[in-house]
Image (cartoon, rainbow, N blue to C red; front, side, top):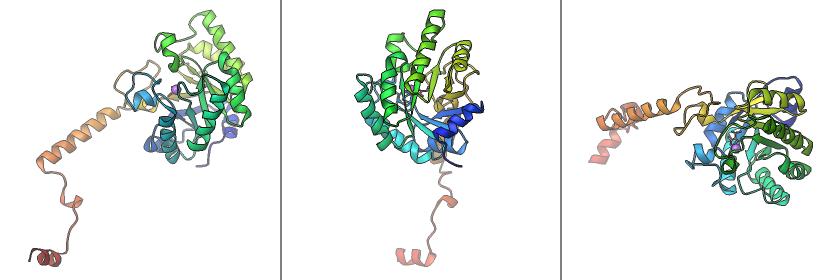
Length: 277
Ligand code: KIV
Ligand code: NA
């Protein structure tokens, strides 16, 4: 299939075709995003939790993320690839943000970067887009700020919070973001924001009225053991499937059922006779 570009995304948005996005963190998870026809692939910093076992996304380094991005890019050839800027790599100044974004484009082989924040990140978004790097914004529940938010909780539940979210959405649009992820907010608020904006909203836990949806692949496939957020749809339970396969392998080894003759290399009997002679 042909490469999804920013133009493809914009054309889907204009036609009101829902945009599908899924995370990936390595070559095989990138490959299946490609093979399943999904439009956009997010190398999300959630990989700190679902792939690396950290309790939050905050410990992830730029080098870690670049390593994962390159692997995803080798598998996800067609999808439009967006990489999360790691916590601590872009907040201190727009200059930092431009520099680290350029590294993701150059060394990470992605097509765009994503960062968390609304009004307060507008200047930064503006600066990154000015050097020709597409930016996906991320508002609502911003996991990198879980300490200030008091955990992973739903946002925009009061009229005041919802108004602040709308301001954030307008600010990132004005700053040049090509889209905005809206995470864990009431569907009505996400719907209203979507209706007000001229750029696509990509929802996660934000209802059906967004311009697109994103899920964390490990959550969707049942590969994360810690917790299942309310907004996740688990499409299968890979953990169960894999565990039972590996249990079978373990038993096969113990009982000598594996390797079978068909898993074994033969040798010419003449050579064998010579060898033992
Ligand atoms: O890191 C991630 O996977 C994300 C999505 C949940 C939007 O930011
Ligand atoms: Na993220």
